[in-house]
Image (cartoon, rainbow, N blue to C red):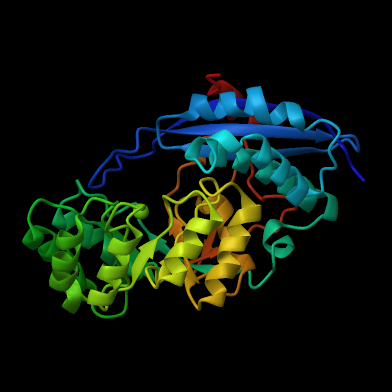
Length: 362
Ligand code: MG
């Protein structure tokens, strides 16, 4: 059995490719935390995690000071065992964002090794349901984009064969949000999914009111209407509207998803492999959602989520936000509006090591 012989972590800043705004924040830069794990059979696994601009150095410290020193000598393919050891060792900071992000960088490196050793791509190793996954575009729907440009982007996405577009909401007046969405629906007709995302910006009463105002636009889902820790608010909202409620990008543990699913507060699960602590817990959330007959449409990170979504039977969508082009040599393959999971052994991300080294900040 291959044993871990060395591990290192470093931080790389990847500039945003375009301005990205929503109701509560801007994407400043992608702080990308890399972990490389070497095993005594001569392999190196590369994992990663990220933030959208703050906290990257805290994740790096967690890795360097507390997690990586525990890896040496552990068996690399006992991923559940390694994960639980690290989790137990950091009890005083779990469940929490920094620790989950750090765990994800280790976990994805171990999965990269596992797939390399089996000479299999991630989508097959993680379940292998089907290789191609429908795609929707978020890159054309940011909050600062005006209505004409939103409409043009949605029309172009439909023409390219994509199945959906996401539009940020949270303008000061309900009518402004409604008019933007109605203009898109009018232009694209009934055959395109329109997802809307409030990024946790609303109060319970406002969300119920806005959902009511959006009812006749035929939305695929209303995403993160309320703060993620307001489970009962999501329960009330879900009972008051026919629009499916999507949550998950701001959750950091499997148990948080259980709570939402058990209480009927989530109709779409958007589990993020970095924020939930890696592929190991991501798959648990995905299978839990399947047991509740709920679709998984993961948040961001299309380069790895394409493989995970392809792996599971309830994976419904990959979110198109290209952000790694500056540090990868090839892009995610898209054919007829569907994303194709890579067939290369490992995570399937074609890292450009020189470009990564040039952007190293810690
Ligand atoms: Mg979102």
